[in-house]
Amino acid sequence: MKNTNAIGSKVQMCERPPRLKYLKVKNFRALHNVEFRDLAPLTVLLGPNGSGKSTVFDVFAFLSECFEIGLRRAWDKRGRAKELRTREAEGPITIEIKYKEPNYPTITYHLSIDEKGGAPVVVEEWLQWRRAQRGRPFRFLEYREGKGQAVSGDKPDEEDQRIEIPLKSADLLAVNALGQFADHPRVAALREFITGWYVSYLSADSARGQPEAGPQERLSRTGDNLANVIQYLAEQHPERLEHIFRVLRQRVPRIEKVLSETMPDGRLLLQIKDAPFSQPVLAKFASDGTLKMLAYLVLLYDPSPPPFIGIEEPENFLHPRLLPELAEECRLATERTQLLITTHSPFFLNALKPEEVWVLWRDEKGHTQASRVSDITGISQLVQNGALLGHLWMEGFFGVGDPLVNQGAPRLQGKGEGRQ
Image (cartoon, rainbow, N blue to C red; front, side, top):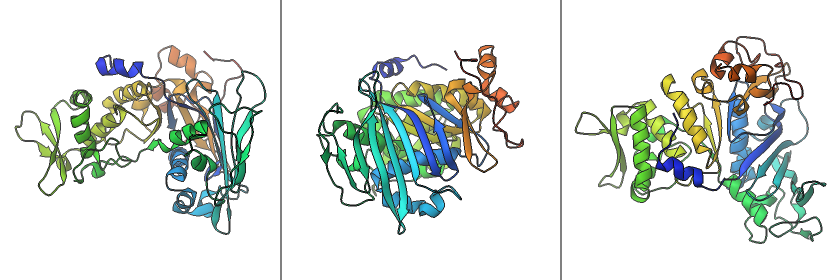
């Protein structure tokens, strides 16, 4: 289902957000050495249980938390090096991303973390880009264990002066620290990009709560403030909220509207009115699927969405026939944000393109491997001839991703073979 209403038209006129183009992870749990190149605005991870989908998801949550609550707390929360480092592996945990701001060259951010005396240490952190079309990339920020240099200015150049700015401790991230200063705008932009990530763990039970009254702009990661966000939309963006209700009615035909009402004790009640009944029912008695669909629509139609959104298994509690339309809505949302989604649903896959899907599996050593579906021999040609990805996956055409079959590497296309 394509959205061609006024809201959809406004969305398409917005300036393109920053885009994550690349991710490389080393020694992070099962991700011993995994690389994702040329990430699409909508990227979906597919694979059996235990293949590493949730671990990739947690890489984004971990990096975001390093900026929000600090490396030490994010590290301790995950069991420190004992639980975080790939089993029987040595060396630091490394995360490397490449992202592109509009009108600027692609920036590479490299972060390597190890442990000393039970505490995390930033053993290496750098930013680099290539200003010209050709030439050697240069690092305009480089730190080791709290000591390093950075080049200031909006467009740092190799000839610019590098200034030493020591950090207070070796577990501080230089990008997080320097990104708070106006004379490092590119560092600040990266910091804002990462701290703005929304890695969701939406729960229907959380949405049933009765939070304190008061409008809130952004949905929490669990969705426990859904009533507050609906209150905000009703006050500040009523046309957007009406559009959300209109789409919700298409998905759940008996629903007329959703109400957010303040009680005398200051709590906020979320109520859902079904036709033909005159009185609404409390959200606590609504179905899991209704609440999850409402939360997804509020997230995807956020008037000012996060630059990056992660959603795990959106198919849970939803009717399979709703999933292709939800996938199309996710793709529409990429006009204003970037999405990473994990799934087990062939119905969701049926609405996707081969270049949007990565299949994950474990090799004989227990390490996660990943391949873009468009790189698997024959898949793109089958889709061009009318086949659907979900059907191809269920019928074993991917060669990997089936939990009942021994996993080997997929047959990948040679250079240029099958590329469009």
